Length: 366
Image: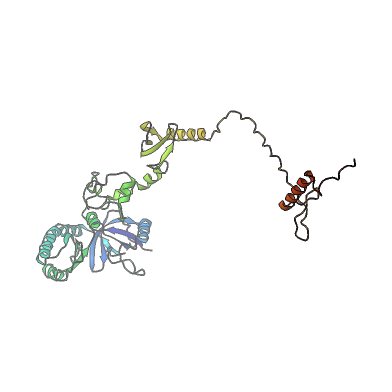
């Protein structure tokens, strides 16, 4: 069964090929001549065996298997092209000559771009090992119509011309350089995939939002902002959120800032001002404050409540039933209760006292 081999070319371009197991096994960083779409190319082995097979299976969507062309991935059923042979001394000399001439080629391409008045920046040029193809990498903010430029360059260099537009991050990865940390760009050494980086990563790490301090050589946000972001998010879960008010042994204090490396919290209260406290001590004070607040208050004994006395019932005069003829009922003495009857009784009583007939008792015998 043929062995899978990963071969890297100029810049970050790479491809996957096969090598017969019957031959002497290849080694990492060994120069080889491989078969490509239009001829032969020169590269160096970066992975072999199972490691190359796993990388080929995981990156099959982002690189051209067998051609090393990330812009045009082949069909899923297309077989891998093979490694033709190990590169010899003459092959390495021809490869080095092509690399030395690429800078002169780039200058000529820039002159032709200015002649055609095209808004594009030529980043790099790359000869194929057999010089059957010249690839020109450029960046541009908008779409560029370079058909006339391709015809002009084809007549100038007498080879197949391929113009490929790339982004500014891909340009930095291809050209390489030294970052703010003093080391070579991660994207041009070991970082194989350029994942997106947004401004929220810098905010979570409390970094300066000055673009000149958090941007890389490509002018975009630093790729390394994403390396420690997960650590910052996990560490901040142990700290109270900034701006939150806490009940401590001192009183109500507001969280101003946190220091996740020294595990300190900056607090401020209106009565006692600002202070810096360790996270462990802050937790103890919060627990003591909660314990004090949950203790019930002791009160003096209260006298028993005075029982309420119900008021005496009000006597109610009960009247007799109303007669059937609608007249006013009589009271307990048999007299009528209406005002007319009372006036008649007064008149009778008055006539009796005056000696009149009726109403008084009969005179006694002499």
